[in-house]
Length: 360
Image 1 (cartoon, rainbow, N blue to C red):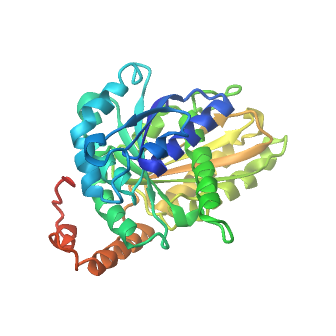
Image 2: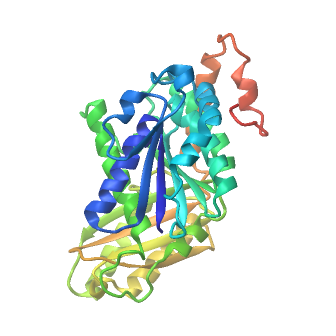
């Protein structure tokens, strides 16, 4: 799936850079172009992509200080500048647009829904959001921001591919080391998904293409992406167990949103040397995902790739009923309860309103 990436906020800009770097390093060519947008000048300076500084008249390049309402207002005011930066980048070759954002910070959580809505009005391709949930230890403000932003952005985007920071953090890592490792892990997963069918080595029996990804995400809402790999045998029949074990690991322990196994739809992609991918293994893996997710809409296919390993990618669409999402939303509600002493209108009332308006 050929795409254009737009990183919003600090986390969004860094992950966008990691995704573009992975795509170039692997030679896939799925990422057509990338832009980073932020209210903080310092966060843009080290990024190896085109950058757009917004909100200079409001915050003078110093960021919005975690205020996602201000982040939304700034994006609304300066969206023309952002859209102008995309001129000539979203070409006829593009099959999708990904808005990449951390949902806990002010610029990302506030700006991503506004930008997704504006992009959907202009471009006739799916607009997805790659959203990052804050970890449990990142503070109440980040939980509140992410809870409010997630409800809004899920309504504005064609689908939200959600990543839980807590699923990737390792004990003993510093904060910066943890984020760098998370970005690399996410870039590998999403980069392989985007590249499936675009830059293949050899010819598979049933090669996945962009339409399979789009159809899997067609139901909208929240999506998750799982990944696992293992050493491959030269003989395809010997890799049936490897395909099954990596598929189970991708769904049960290697997903971007742990415990998100109930899904409306799914796509199983088995990557590796064409001669090492067993058809029986792919079909068994597809049937297992069908049983595990309870979905009757499970697609499967190959991603021919020059590698000594077998890898399973499992994209799950419509996972908002999962335990992980419910526990996060409860965490966000608790954070809102603790923030009731704020002088502005009680955000708890907005939280319980299913018809929540835009953050503006």
